[in-house]
Amino acid sequence: HKTNFDGVCFYPKWSLPGYAAIFRHPNDELNFCYYLIPSGKEGMCGDVSEADLARLHNDAITKDPFISAALGPNPKMERMRVAPLRLGSQGITTTYDDHMIILGDAAGHIDPLTGEGIHTAMMSGKAGAETLIDMVATGDFTKQSTKEYARRWWARYGHDFKMSQLMADTVYKYPILLDACASEMQRQGDTMMAKWAEIMTCMQPKTYFLQPHVAVPLGISVVREIFAQYIFKSKPNRYQLKA
Image (cartoon, rainbow, N blue to C red; front, side, top):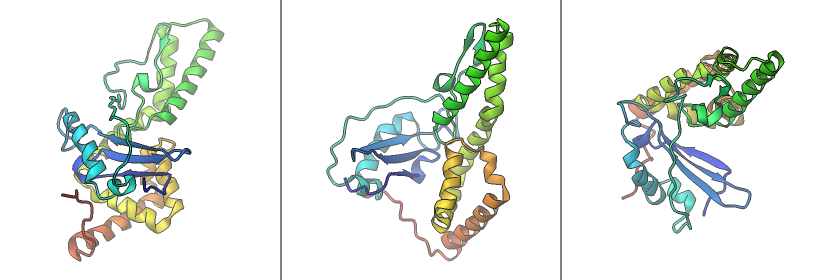
C-alpha cells in the first residue's frame, strides 16, 4: 500500500452521512471500513441503502481518487465482511429489568452520527458497575433498582443520541458543513483536530459544537466555503469517482 498516515476518514458525498476509513496497524497492515449511517427516508442511508454497500466498498477500492491512491494499485485484501450496528438504542425498548441490565453494543449504545461505540461502552460499563454495587448493598435486584442504570447512562451520553441523528441528517443535506470542518482543521492543525476527535468518539457531547470557541471559527469557515465553492468557484470538486 501507499499509506503513510495512521488513520483517515473519507466522506464521499454519494454515501453521506456514511463514511469510509483507513487505519494503519503497528504491523503496517491496513484496516479499511465503509460505514452506512441511517438518514433520510425509512430504510435509507442518505441516497443509498444496505444493498449498495458492496458496490460502494468495491468502487472505493478501485475508483475513489483518495482511497484507491492510499491502498495502491494491487492491494492484497481479505474478503469483504459485513455486520450491522444497532445505532442509538435502535430496536431496544428497555435496557433493564428484574436481575438484568444491557450494556454497550448489545444495548445499541453506538453513536448515530459516527458509528463509534467504544467510549460509550466503557461509560455504560461504569454505570452498570455502579448500579450493581448499589444493588449488592441493598440486596434489591428488581427492576426498581436496575432502573437506576438506565438513568445513569442516559444522563451521561444517551441524551446525545438525538443530537447525533439530527447532525447526521444535517450533514446529508448540507455536505458543505463537512468541507468547512475539514478546512478549519487544516487551518488550526492539531488543536481543532483534537476537538473533533473528542466529539466524534463521544468524549464530548455534540452540543460541544455550539460552544463559542468551536462554533465561531466553524461558522466563519462555512462562510469561506460558500464563497470559495459557489461565489468565486475557486475550489473545484476533486472528489469524483474515476471512470
